[in-house]
Amino acid sequence: MDGTMTTTKSCMIKPAWTPATIGLMVLGFVVFWPLGLAMLAYVLWGDRFEGLARDAKDQWRGSPLKGAFDQMSSTTGYARTGNVAFDDYREREMKRLEEERAKLDAMRADFDDFLRELRRARDQEEFDRYMANRGRKTGDGDAAPA
Image (tube, rainbow, N blue to C red; front, side):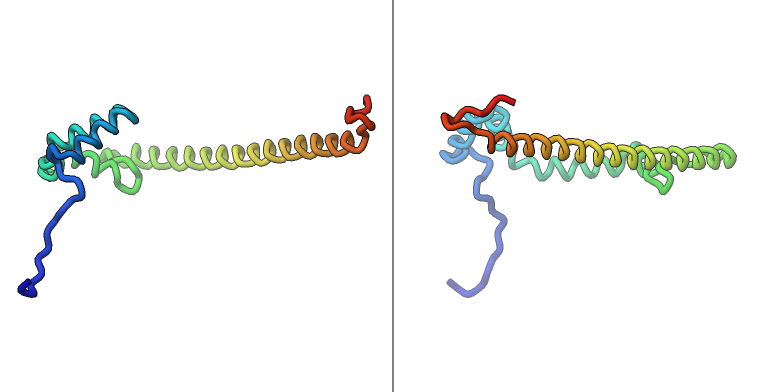
């Protein structure tokens, strides 16, 4: 060794027909067929995945849809129409709807708490009944009639 260090990018399993990839593919088909299919795709096209992802990102950056999605992700969630009166109306209505949703969420949480307390009370009643019946066992192991 000459003392210089080189870094290489390596994977445990390379996209090639090796005994390990074939075994994993067969095992994938045996366990759950989509896993085997994914392994087959990795073996066949795994060396191209990095380039495909880069090409897809490049195409998205140049897409006209990207601009539309970026506009919709503004602070209001919708792009301004240019009509100030309509935009103000829409913002007021969206705020009102958000407040209604918050009220509904609070009511749902209250109802969930009510159901949880109802279940706890029912469980407590069943447990108390069990404990009362447990003390009334007869000598042969049968419970006394209520």
